[in-house]
Image 1: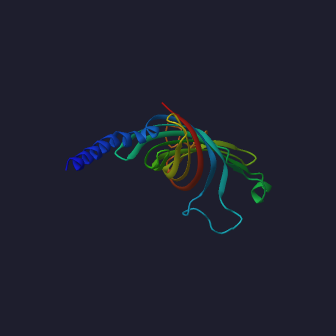
Image 2: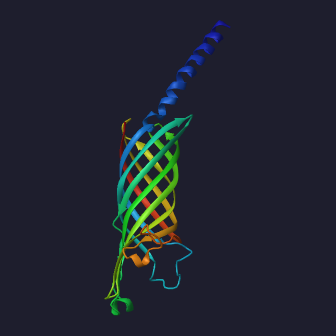
Image 3: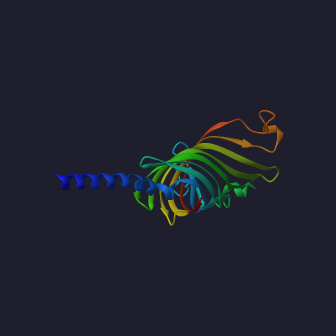
Length: 228
């Protein structure tokens, strides 16, 4: 009986010691963080506006995305929750290079501008050094548009509002440094132009009226960051 009681006490003591140890397993993934991001960026017309007529017209642009992000993560039981924000841009662009429009003296160019994201994420530990997570939030993207018909030039910005969802894995190099890889999908459903000509203004704000949009964005991003 005495031996059995000793074993039970030893087991209870071990379990008590294991609780704080398990709680500390999340320490490499909690606290404030900053990160640099880079990866692949593809933007294309959504299903509502894709013409689906010409197979050679994929209505998409792609390029290299890069940016910075900040966030704060905390543990709730065995789950890591966090808030995050990101500012990025991309080299993706397109322009009228040939065809009837160019023959008529019309030219146009679309460049990808800045992209702002604010959202949250939730993750679980796959092992003490690897966090698997999902994310979601609000994104506002800007595209720079230029057009010239031989007589009139138009230069304006197109601002689009949408939502972003994604998933990824973060690996702790140490308690203060990490790398991560994630996929993100964004859909922009509303937009407005910032015209440079007064004739286009709907009011005194210098912005056109808002309109419905359908633009899909796919990104694969690699991140490297530090925790504090």
